[in-house]
Image (cartoon, rainbow over all chains, first blue to last red; front, side, top):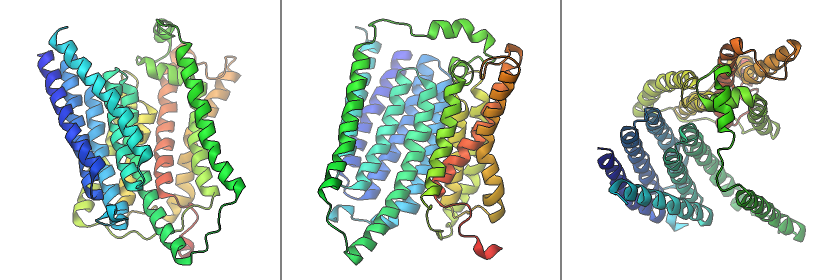
Length: 92
Length: 322
């Protein structure tokens, strides 16, 4: 079971690679921010799988922290950076 | 090598190279928004790396401060910067940099190089195999008043370091205020979605802060994680259009900011008067004192972080209320 959990976490981690490519390439600021939000959500899952695989309950607290803080970053982006940066930040 | 070891090896190599790659992408990016977003991704990957290294306390702090609050602070700073740049390009009176200014710009690079060289030297000079001080910490954990070795080190064995760290945070906020702070800003009222999110998530964040504070006694958690969660609640409220009222900003806010450092100093004086060393607690009172110090520190850290995001001096913007 431990091996299965870890391999599932590894597969999820590999999907992050695709997400990170979007964060780096863009083209719009929202694309990048959404990619990082996917990163946050996947990190929740990976941490929960680790908690199960290694029997470490404290890792569930880390997953909880990932989940609530991702929401705050997303709101900060929409409220502070989104209107200022505009839709096509690559045109600068 | 069995499957689990192979999978762990692949995971760890990918996080290691991924961290270096993201750090370079964040530093080398000419667009600030891209650099910030990649910095947040770097913080998340760093937190996963701490999880893999079994440093759950640091993982919690990295998620809360490194990825969450710093990301929000940088995004807010970018918004200010974009507005300021528009002003500058309108007036177009930018003086040319003199030679001294250009030379000064090289200074951070030189300093960073020296720090990096020092770090490389100290890593190379470490003994190849060492248990560090963990054996001594485990031996004295019984008298520390808590069961989490990290909390025992931070609040008991090395309480002096934490005392100074609390003051560093307070100094950061005083620095922002001394520079004049931001001009009072009008934030557009929140739409129904954001309003609902703030109403639902803020109590959850406050509850979570209390949980992390309490959890720090037995496992990963403690004042910094709890304070960061409380700070996130403050940031969320501000993003939803909330402003501290004049009475709160002038009196209560300042009192809470000072509460954590003041409690620390009182306890330090108390231990000296009682004939012990600075912050050396009697084993029977250690648990209570640590919880007291952590509670004060949580409130102060939370309001300091929220205040850094607020950026305004507490006296400004309320002149009409007198």
